[in-house]
Image (cartoon, rainbow, N blue to C red):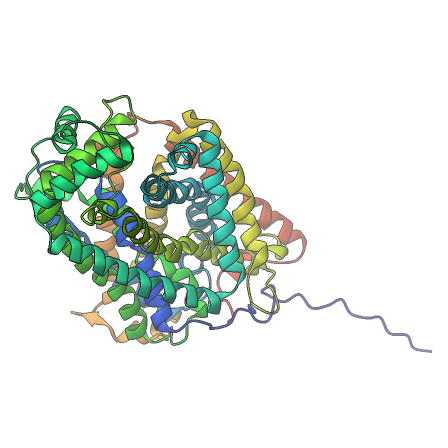
Length: 547
């Protein structure tokens, strides 16, 4: 009798025949995600509050310059998306163009290890723009004080993690609805804020500031004048909106990158966006996400100049930040939130609280950006078999990569506890923006060389026809973007004004160097393990991931 032996199952190249993700977003949803990623209120006002450190810089001009330079980044990323619209974005492109090892190390360090550190940053913004001003406004001083304690800081991190985890596990379609709700109601709140500043005078603001500083914080005397005095001692006195120095203006760009650098934050999600292969749709989503924000920033800056006063705005910011490092305490002991100041122009605490609550939707519409993009990078690496297969597991109903989400949540809990209870470790967080910029730098370098390095991908994509004097547009925009990113990385590395210079803080670059080394170790171990299993990661990284 003849016998047959069952053949071993054929090993597929990728983890599955398809990712299992679905195209749940429209390009308008992608626009909203870009808009939230360069959030005027949560990130913009927060990032611009440091501009007082460069008094001769012209902030509005710096915003416009940053917008123009970031547009080159948008063009580069939009072309990459249309050429290869896959989950993972930076990781997918870098690993296919620069090589699997380089792509994994750059993308995983930037999108996985670094985003853990953004959890306390998001939590801090939630406290200074929502919990603290709202609690003081309704008379809950104890609540505001609690969120300034170590336990309060940790609780705020837990609230952020709980909210972000909830909205992500609801799925892309539900998150799109949350974005829209927060967008329209948040814009309505911004219109009210702008109207208050537009139709009120500077004298009315000074009177309102002194009244509410005494009512809510117990400040005595002329709180407005006292804030100017404390700000002057902090080096932020007498700053004029008309001040202009071209060199100083460019030095504002690394501060503005804290929010204006991120319109491409959603690039890792375009495997789930309908019409992602159409360059114009992708470009419009990112471009308008950036430039609608730039326009709104310009309006808000001009209204602050008109009603609050540019010298006071900078003095209040300088006084607050200086007080955190041992300087004199300002009359208002919390972060000088322009939304709160605008609300003070109406002498009703219920109205003021309502305005702060509505403007808090700018935070909640944006908060999902903390993990959503990162989960797709982790998912893509697991789909390529570099990370454990369970990290690419998705829920059957909502198509959520819950394995990847766990890899974001658990380490973030540890990082949050360290931030809250060991403040001396907070210095390691300072390069959290810089490392993501390094990831972007890897992507734009890959984009610039793609027409030659991966000619097969480029020539078969819709962007192959985009050329200037015979040079691919993606190469031109990639080079300009690289110069822009290198400029900011150099400033963060060596200019003491940003607080991130190596000479001032060696712990942060050392920490991130360790994370890069950890990523290298993970990749090397994966190569060895997969090779023993008969899987060639180098071959996988030559192929385009399936949809």
